[in-house]
Amino acid sequence: MKPEIFLLPYADDYILYAPLKKFLAVVNSDARDAVIKRLEELPLCEAEETALTALDKHGVFSEDFQYPKVDEEFAPTRVTLFPTDRCNLRCRYCYASAEDGGHKLSMSAARAAIDLVARNSKRKHFEQFAVGFHGNGEPFAAFDVVQECCEYVSEAAEREGLKYRISTATNGVLSEERLDYLVAWISDVNVSSDILPDVQNSQRPLANGQGSFEYVDHTLKRLDKAGIQYGIRATVTSESVGRLREMAAFVKQHYPRCNLLHFEPVFEVGRALANHFMTPEPQVFVKEYIKAQEELSGTGIRLVYSGERANTYCQCFCGVCSNGFTLTAEGNVTSCYEICTYQDARAGRYIYGRYNEETGQFEFDKEVISKLLQLQVKNIPFCRDCFCKWHCGGDCAAKLLGDKPLSAHAGSERCVITRALIYRQLLQKIGVDVTNKEPVII
Ligand code: SF4
Ligand code: SF4
Ligand code: SF4
Image (cartoon, rainbow, N blue to C red; front, side):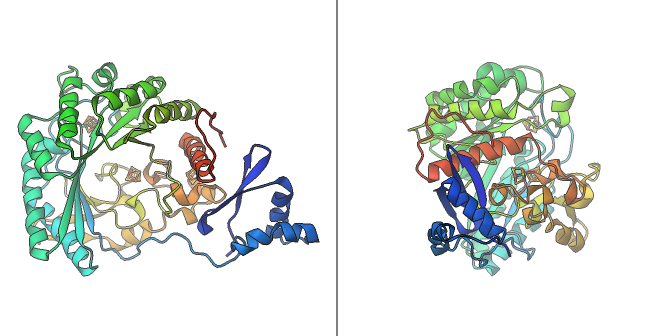
């Protein structure tokens, strides 16, 4: 395999980045020219050979390297359960267009899924298995299912002699009883909230149209006081992007023990499309995101955007290509949080199984599972020359590819954000103080 080396502009010099060698250095233009010649197998003069000696010492040109690995054996040790697809909110940009009615997860299916991941963890000699609640609805809208599942997780762990971790996403509009339960049972909570009262009330109203801020604020303050690990995920629109610093300041003031503040641009799908919500201009998102980062500097609150992960090496943006095991309220098994039902035209690629209530077994489609493995960034032509490829993993397959062939991947505006923020992380790794520095759009 040819070594993978990226040369990125940096002031009058260049950053040489060999991600698979975890090598990063600043080189001048002469060294850059020599690197290009070496890669193109052109003859080098003595001075150029000397310039490359240090890089040779670090094995930068060596063909001995490995791509990030994915687990090709289907044996998930984590399951995400969708207790229901109904919701007590009517977020105006909801990708799932969730509302009343809908489905409720059967407990026999949930128990079988918990047993499966517990058994796999034991077989793999792991110390623990993981169960998460998420949904194309609010998990706690099916509170009885959440309760029964948590209790069954504890039983399964005891039976297998394992530890467990339960996490949940929630919209934070919870009764006191549900909040008590959540604090008692769940160790990792991710609250979807647009933080500022006016933004939250307008973008994430209750089902009756009234504002939801006071409920979510109460939940966040309770989590803060309880000292459990929690994060806040805010969806950023073209209207709210100018207020990211204000949001960060609000979190710092009101929820100081929040571990993670997650900003994610809205996707123009579901109700976001119907309500004409627009994703922010990527350059504007990057600038405002950096201001928010500065606001949080020196606090224990880590700001994240899903693509900003220079310390992650992967083949896939999420678990979609390998061992992504999500059981939907309808009883489908899908590799993707967003593709839950066969009414979705993309279902054939992502939904790979179903729980059979009569036999009490999962029926998995091995062919679909094996084809999902193809969704690795090494196979995506569009990402081939991107210096972020092993960190980004080709971004969200459901949105960028859907059911189309890999050759149809054409990136998105999110690539601009991902590249600018990862480039900034690389600068930090080489010791550059990026405070007050304009982002480089690369
Ligand atoms: S809380 Fe989530 S599922 Fe419910 S309406 Fe809002 S975005 Fe949709
Ligand atoms: S493919 Fe996209 S929507 Fe599906 S789970 Fe991964 S990131 Fe989420
Ligand atoms: S081209 Fe875009 S999607 Fe592909 S790896 Fe780079 S940033 Fe990610």
